[in-house]
Length: 379
Image 1 (cartoon, one colour):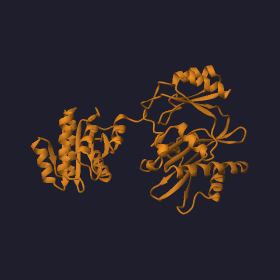
Image 2 (cartoon, rainbow, N blue to C red; image 1 turned 120 degrees about the vertical axis):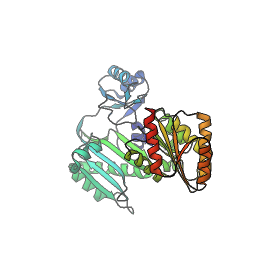
Image 3 (cartoon, rainbow, N blue to C red; image 1 turned 60 degrees about the vertical axis):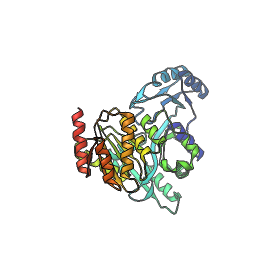
Image 4 (cartoon, rainbow, N blue to C red; image 1 turned 90 degrees about the horizontal axis):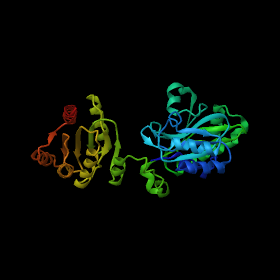
């Protein structure tokens, strides 16, 4: 779960990371009031869960409350990467001497938490990694210990920070690490962490991505989910307890098991097509959950064909087949579908679908080929 910038920075501040003063505004008039409260130049920042806000015109400086109101009026309602802007953060403007990138994530290959830092702040880390990977410092954290002081000093030296900033950098790095661990995050990022003209460190932008599987331990953080930013189909899937991610392809996929779902998507790509979604109905999904999953896939207007790939272990193929027919009777789809059912009660499941006139297959390659051909036939 991604948190908006204003939420991320509020949480960082709880753990000792210094941030600029700022307030959230939903209207231009509110932005003006906040600028008056800050009594100086401000930065008006679109609050959307997308990168590249500055390049899209979603981050603008204003030197007076009146200008802040005009700037907010231009930003509110604009779209950034397809996401409408419904609120802005009005932060005090900061005079900066230099900018740093500081982030913490999980290196799954190394099975370690890793701290990433770069003197090239203000740029997305993917751009730095692509253009100048040597400018990224990677510092793994060993599981038995937290981030150690000597590691933080090594980072500070690698970034070229003057010695008088090491103490405050230690506070920031330790605060970011404590945030990461306490929130069960998968990413905690300050970009940029600026050195001000006064010689202070401030986290002027922040990003926090939480592990969905840990949200049960953090009901306060779960309440920060921005429903306005969430796609309606992904929100519906979450309410139904389904793992669903909407993609840009045209072949809808319904699969039981994350690994099998990834393999199914790979085969579709191998055949020159693209999946419209990732959807895992889980190992023990019964007819009602299968019906809900298929409803979500069919509600995506970009889907031209549906591939159902089910391995019947805990999930019985006849239950899946009943769920498919229940969904079809409710939605009455006009797009073609092909189902591959293998495993527990597979013959019964295929019989149920065949009697209803649905195309079936016994192998993944056969099912994927049929789905790709069906999608092309819809063009």
